[in-house]
Length: 367
View: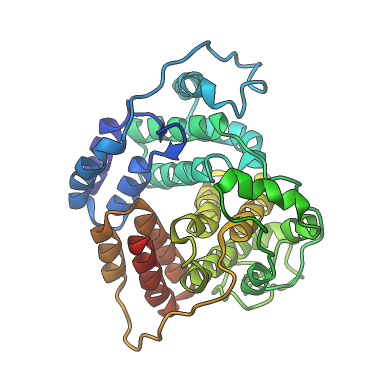
C-alpha cells in the first residue's frame, strides 16, 4: 500500500517544477518519500493537498541539450526545462543505475546546487528505487538529477588536505562562521573564499567508525577514531555516517539561529550516504569528500555563534513519536530532519539522537 501511495504522489507532482518563486525548492517529492518510508503513507496525499499552493508548473525547455554538449548549460537555471527533458531522454534509453553512475561524478563537484537540495532530492529518489523500482521513481530520479544540473554550484575554494583522525563533532565545532550572516546562502557560501583556513577545513575529512579486523562495518560512534589499518574505501560508509550523526546532533544546540537552513548540514551528507549502495566503490572517496565539504560549508554559513543545548529529557522517545511530531508540523525540513535522525539512530542505537531531534523539530516549527 505504501509503495502504491508513494508512486501515486510522484505521478501527481511529476508535472511540477523543481522550484517556485524563482529559487525556493520544491520539497514535495522528498517529504512524500520520507513520510511513506516511515509508515505514514496515509498522510502523503493530505500533506500534498496542503502544499499544493507552493507548486509551480514544470518549466518548458528552450533548446535541447545535446549528449556531448552538457558542460556549457551546467549550472544554468534558465535551462531547467532543457535539463528535465534531457534526463527524461537519458532514463528512457538506459537503466537508472547506469545514468546515475554516469552523472554522479559530473554533478558531485556542484553539490551546493539549490542549497544542497539537488543532491538531497536525488538521495530520496535513490532510496525509493533501491526499495522498489517503478516508473514514477525512475522519473523522479531524473527530475532530481535535472534540478542538480540546472543549479550546479561548486563550494567556493575546494578543500585540500589529508584525512585526519578527528571526530566529526569536534571537526564541526572547529568550523569558523562566515562573518556576514545577513543574506542568503549564495552570499554566505561566497565568503568561504575569505576564510584562510577553509581549504584545510573542507579537505580534512574527519574519521569516525569502529571496524572489525576484516574491515566490515561495526557500530558507529561519532567520537570513536577510525582504525587506520583498514583501507580507506572500506571505511567510507562509517565515516559518512559519523558526519551525518554529528551534524544531526549538533543541530539541536546550534540550530536556533537558522533552524531550517542548518538542517542541510545533516540531510545533504545523508543523501550521499543513501546513494552509496547504488554507486561503484570507485566513486565513494569523492562522494565522502564532497559530502563533508557540504556539511562544513552549511555549518560555516548557518551555525549559531554559541551552543544552547536542549533541556535533558529523561524518558526514551519512540522513533514513531518523532516522525509523527515532524509530520504534524507539516514542515518538509522538520520531516527530513526527523527522517535523517532515524537513520542515525539505526546506525548508533543512541536514544539521545531521537530526543535531540525532537528539539530540532520544535525549533524548525517555530521558525
